[in-house]
Length: 277
Figure 1 (cartoon, rainbow, N blue to C red):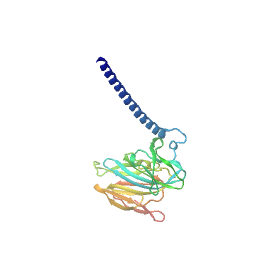
Figure 2 (cartoon, one colour):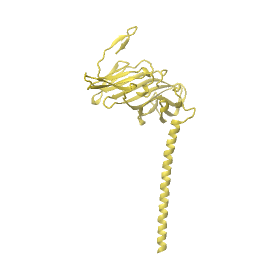
Figure 3 (cartoon, rainbow, N blue to C red):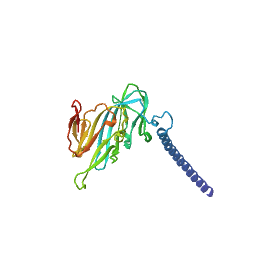
Figure 4 (cartoon, rainbow, N blue to C red):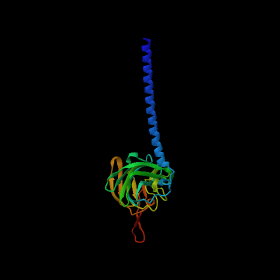
């Protein structure tokens, strides 16, 4: 009887040891996977290799932006803004990397995409931020081909800071006692702060055309570089103003303001063909 009891105890101990070993192996595998993933992303984002284009201060010349479709929606109650951008690119040299500028923006993870001009989706192996040079890096599974056009896009969010740079908040006193403060959203992109408002190729040589949509509460007025093409009433008191396509220009020349001001227009220019506000 005693021998049978000892054998049962040994069997239980053996099963416990096997279970402990199995759990330990699973934990080690899980830790290894997590570490490998972190190391992989760190290598991509922090590699010191000379071929890493995000370690250079200037944008690569392999891609050229041609057109932006940009929508911004500032909230002047909680001082944040959301947006979407789609950028049409022309490929000048084969590349798997797409670099553009981003500063103090949060990119919505599942919103980043790459497709052909016809709308065929292309696989992105990875994307990451490289804060040193304020780059957002997209890595395509297949190399982009010279002479073809592609479209990248994403959703993003930022804060309307009071620093008078990028897309920021301003205010004014609505009465003489200064106890009624009114806020407005304003842009100041020169020399290189458009990247604080939307992901873009934020260098003067990277010119493109822009279709801008500004979404604002109905009691506000929105102004942009171009006249309004169409106003669209959206839910919960929001209005979307769609503007005509701009001329080809660098990012720092895009301008807009959302405020409860009234405004006047005037005609200027040598030929009387420039409208100012």
